[in-house]
Image 1 (cartoon, helix red, strand yellow):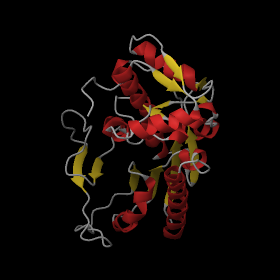
Image 2 (cartoon, helix red, strand yellow; image 1 turned 180 degrees about the vertical axis):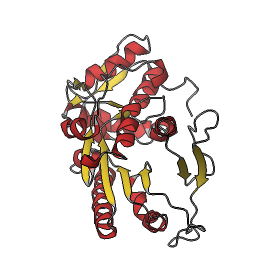
Image 3 (cartoon, rainbow, N blue to C red; image 1 turned 90 degrees about the vertical axis):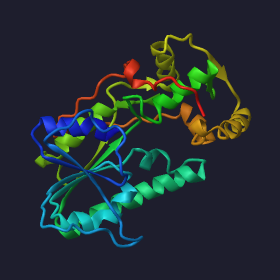
Image 4 (cartoon, helix red, strand yellow; image 1 turned 180 degrees about the horizontal axis):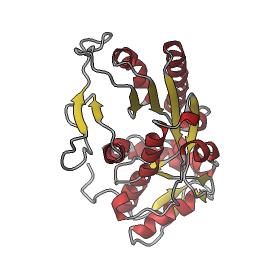
Length: 291
């Protein structure tokens, strides 16, 4: 999703881009072709050894948009291409999910933290400049797993369940603003060897965030307050549907927790200028029958 925004941004800025993917076809590949973008596939020869570059090609600047825990698998590839600067996308979930009631979420937070530390240690030992970007709740282009999941639930059931007052504060950040920060991090000397939080310009309660989704969908706002015990049962049933298999009770518990992160450092060093949370129709999923 971030790549869909970042690739044309870099091409239009004059960068010559090699877009590597672990998949044979990239979802969200920009329409048309650009002389500045070459799409390539990363291959593994086996579970431990990565396909080494066959030429003396040199690529000094990299942005990793895969989950950061994938990045250590490709340290040898980056070294072979003579990388000098690497930007990695992490998440503020490294902070918000470490004490989650859900074991899987705790493991995700642990993987994020461990991968960030491994990345920093490897970069330092290799004399490679590093930058870590940690977005909050990313939305946009109808492809995210945050706002779009809420919209799909509303579309399917006509209401949205809330736990308590659902006044926990949120800062949704648009995917295009994240992509702009990635592009800035490639060149900013001030960003060298630093980590940044990327949060949206607006702080709003969880209930209001969902209410705006109702409004952009031109649907009446219908909320149902559900006790935690009932939420547990409902989530168990929902996870039987492929569309909602990633839902958890911990998600409901966080409806009343503030998840706010200061992005002043990113403003200063990256010129980060996020937008208010005002999603438009193209930020929502295309309507289709759920599985």
